[in-house]
Length: 288
Image (cartoon, rainbow, N blue to C red; front, top):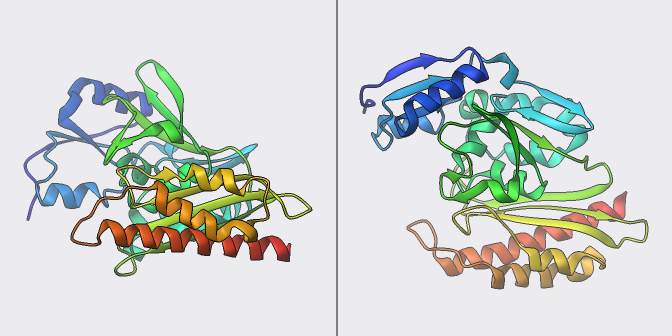
């Protein structure tokens, strides 16, 4: 199939892109990697009247470490996976991104595009939530920062206004004193996860967890944190509470059912993956 007719505009700056977004309102879509948008357009599930290409805006691409780790919105998945800065600062990001699609998709798809697309089964939004990322959004009035927990509203819907553009994702602290784990279950490699988990914890010299984040994908219309499991972890040795944290995750979520999996199956997988991730983290903590 082919897309419905549309007009094409290539933005040379963030200011030009936001002006075009403001001009065309609901009738416009932003083209970055296009790995989600173009298939939707070809199936005519998306019918924008105007397509704004932001690939020529150099300021939107790149990776920088300056207190935190900042990944530009149009940075390709493959560049993030290869980045030494990402591997040193937050290796869970590269681990999760190896589950994103296939080589062709990772070579063209963009980090910010995945965040802005807001698929609740996608790996990158779940990582963004687990790592307390800060999202930089630009509009006609300038830039503002949105916390990851406030950014995702529902399936394919974010907190951004129609005339705003995601420009960067910033991760505020390194994981050099933390343990982490990422797991997911999918029907086939490269498919979106039926359930995925990204877990991060800081552990003191006595092996006690002092801070924890456990985020799940595929179990709601947005990626979600399992706050009951996080609260259980703090003040405990991870290995002592891994199984109970998994049971808490199973009880706390209320996933929907579809032709891929039942709600009961997703709950059971969430319990198993949270327990597995935490046991992985306990082993990493013991080997430090």
